[in-house]
Structures are given as structure tokens and as C-alpha cells.
Amino acid sequence: MAASTAAGGRLALEVFEPPDGGVPEHALLLALGLRDRGFEVELVGPRDSQVEARASEAGIRLHTLAFRRDYRHPWDDARAGLELRRLVQARRPGIVHCHASKAGAIGRAALAGTGTRTIYTPHCFGFVGEVSRARQLLVSRTERALARLSAKIVCVCEAELAVARGNRIGTPEQLAVLRYGVPEADHQSLADPRLSELRQGGRLFANIARLRTQKRQDVFLEAARVALDRDERARIALIGNGPLAPELRAQAARLGLDRDARFALLPFTPPVERYMSAIDVFVLSSSWEALPISLLEAQAWGVPQIATAVFGTPEIITPQTGRLVAPRDPADLAAAMLELNGDEVDFEAMSEASRARHAERFTLERMLSETASLYEEVLSSPT
Image (tube, rainbow, N blue to C red):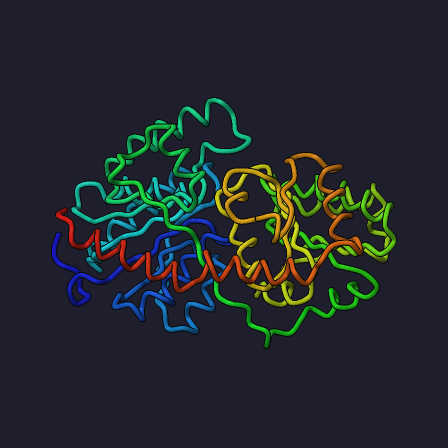
């Protein structure tokens, strides 16, 4: 493959398939930050990406492919692979960094034999979580096979590294841990007025996430009902969009939450700052995760956290910043919410500890510097 059109082969393509959520946000942060570290960066994603407008405003090129979120459109998947191979042949990047399992599979398979230096970040392997045994076997075997086409496999937490090792994915030389980083809080952001009003009279607990099975907002709603029944000062909100919205609204109605003035179910409209600046405690009720970016954003804002103790979340939350609870356990989640709503909790100390935790481990600058170093290492290695 010929040298990149960028000087010294320093063009990097950040390839992602999910249209929304933490993966495209992460890719956009890399594109914005790596420009100041000597790289030319372009995004490659689906046609309905949530970061398209912001990338355009920042002068970052976004190439759109025929990516589909599900696995029911094999012809579109094949077309996306062909489009990516043609794009790489035209742009000749030094690095192609594939994000999430589907883009990782399509991208690495499509670029086989081109001599492209390919990096893969799974952002939670596709065989992890509440999936069938057949999918576990198929996807884990696919990951092992595709690992041979990867210059590096980047795990976002120690738990993900353990999953890779346990499933014999990649060699020790290929595997690396590079935790997410997020920007510091922007205190100029205006708080969402609906949440500001709801917050009056008590601490506001909010779950902000894509409405899908992984996030188990059904457990959050059950816990919300318990917490509101036991403490009249509690204020609770569920914020998000996604395929489970109708189902969750129906559940909220069955629980009487839609008639409780202390509860709100709201759609999500970027940016996340409008919500983080308006809440007191961030709650994540997922059944599985890698390293949830939303928890890092909460820490950057000094917002204490409650989250299920799954995979990478114990690497984020400490007893000083929040509480870890059992997954799929509404009673345990409600108990943590009630505890943090109590007068005996030093809430200011938890907020300060959260900001300190972000500054110590999860800054954007640290992530960008480590990513740039990884890219330099890959570029200096033979193809």
C-alpha cells in the first residue's frame, strides 16, 4: 500500500458503526484532540451519526458508509466493507482505528491484504453480556480469527483486558489498555429547565443513557418507585432515547410514576452538559458495560454516582465518589439512592472526590496523549 496522502503517513481514520452513544462521542473526541498532536484525523461512520453536525462545525471530515446497527442486513454490511476498502485506497491513511465490534469485524476483514495498520477498540466485546450461547461462541471465535489482522487491540479497562485474555483474543504484544478520558466540566452550560424545576425540594437522581436492554432502565424504574415511596424528598428522572422508550413509558404508567410530580421521563437532546449541570446523583443500572463514559462525565462534573458493579464500573467508582450495587436488583439500587438522599451523607465531600478522581485518572489530555503515543508506536512498526 502506498504512503498516506498526509505528510509522513499521519492520516488516521476513526471508523465507527453505532450512530449514537459513547462510541461516536469517543471517536469525535479523538478527532478533535489528535489534530493538536500532529495527526490529520477523519471520521468514518453511518449516515445518521449524532456527531455529524459537530464534526462539520469543527472542520472534521466525516465519510458516511452503509453501516447498519443490526445484523439483519448482510448486503449493506458487505457494501460498507467495500466502501471502506475503496476509501482507504483513495485516502491511504497511516492508521485505521476501528471502534466497536461490528465496525471492527467489517473493517479488519475488508482491509485484509492491503497492508493497512489497523487498530481495534471493541468498547465491550460483542459476546459479553446477556447474549445467547451460540452468539458467545460465534463472536468469540470471530474475534480470535480477526485478531491476526490487528496491529493493536485496545481495551478500555482492565476488565476488558481480562476478557480478551480469557478468550485468547490477540497476543500479549497486541493487547493494550487505554482508558477513556473526558473533558473537564463546562460550568458555562445552561441547565435543562425541566430538571432545574424538578430538583426543587430534594436531590435529583437521574439515569441518562440509551434506552435499550443493556442499560436495564426497567430496574431503575422499579427502584425509583421504591425510593419515592420511602422518601418524599426524592426526585428522580429517566432521560434517554431508544427502542425501549414505549415499553418503559408503559412501565412507568403501571408504577404510577407518570402521575408523580417528583418523577420525569424525558428525551435526551445533546449536549450531556445540560443534564449533568442540573442533577445531584448520576445512576447507571446496566447489566453489562466496558467502561461507561457517562460515569466519567459525572465525575468530571462532581456528580456522585450509583452504578451496578459490572465489568469496568468498579474501576471508576470508589466509596468516596459513589456506590456500587448489584445488577438486576431494584431493592439494592433503591437502598443506595435512599442512602445518598440522607442527611448523614457528606455530599460536598463526594462531589469533590469525584472531581479529584476524574483529574487523577480520566482526563481528556491523558487519553489523547496515550492515544498519540500508541499511534506513533504502530506507525513505527513494520506492516
